[in-house]
Image (cartoon, rainbow, N blue to C red; front, side, top):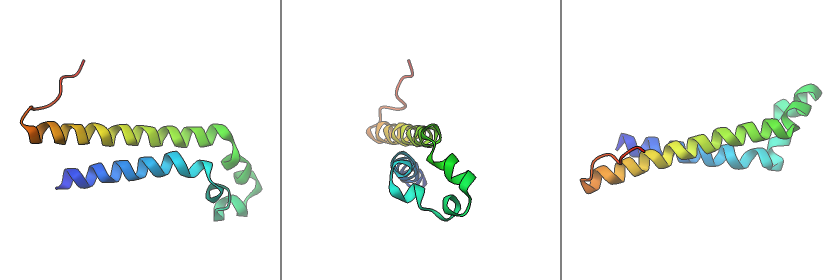
Length: 82
C-alpha cells in the first residue's frame, strides 16, 4: 500500500512539474511578481525546461515503480535490467 502511494506521488508531482512551467500560473505567482529579477529568471525557457526535465524524471521513476509492483503481483519477480 505504501508503495502505491509513493507511485501516485511520483506520477502526480511529475505531471505537475512537466505541465505547470508552461502555463500562465507559472508567471503569475507571488515570487515572480514581487521581484523583477526573479520574474526574468522564472520566464527563462531554460529554467522551464529544467523544471520540466525534473518532472520527466519523476514520471519515469513512478512508471518504473508501477511496473515493479505489477511484475511482483503477477509473480514474475523483478524485470530484467538490460
